[in-house]
Image 1 (tube, rainbow, N blue to C red):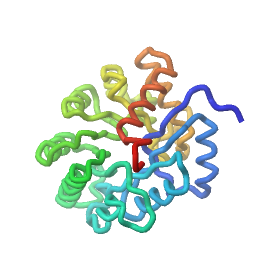
Image 2 (image 1 turned 120 degrees about the vertical axis):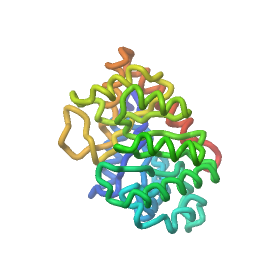
Image 3 (image 1 turned 135 degrees about the horizontal axis):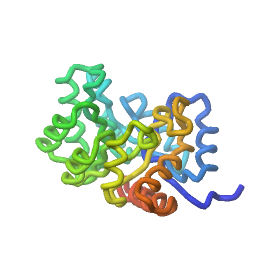
Image 4 (image 1 turned 60 degrees about the horizontal axis):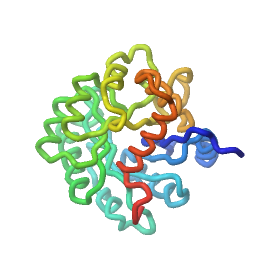
Length: 262
């Protein structure tokens, strides 16, 4: 099988809900997705991600507790982050974590406490932080400013506009762009992508959610991350292969892929 000319990294996907993860990984590799970051949303899914990473040298795992699950606390999370659970590898980041006031599946105070504690873990262990924020920009920035934003921080599935993007960049953070950028209604996100330097962007699928056009409404797949990259290229009016090479470089540097111990 020939190697696709353009290579990508899907820097944020959830693989625990698929029936045949092996086939999904093979499909993504054939589509030019050379590496994937499998993201945990609680201790169980974080463990799944790290187990998957232990079996596939092009898959990496994170460990975190999503704001939806904040009411359950973070017991067991630090052990995963320290790499002290069996033969599991250490995660490449803490998260995803943050605030979500669109649904408020967990009480606001629980979300704030669990988010703050995970910022602390990222800072203590020198790991990147993966942030989920929805309808909570000001509060998210407030907590980050109070706790101390880790040197490597990404706002995953960025849904803000130029103003929010500037606030993220001012704090040294990266933005990760999802399939939302392909939606006609996502003018704010598109304007932000146009304004943000390419060296501050990464691309993701957030699979199985948010499939990009022309697959909107379907179960998303890591193999479709290139469609996100193509949309970024069109907005910035630059070649697709430039978006691919720079976002791959950004992702590898951000997560420390290939460094000793990862």
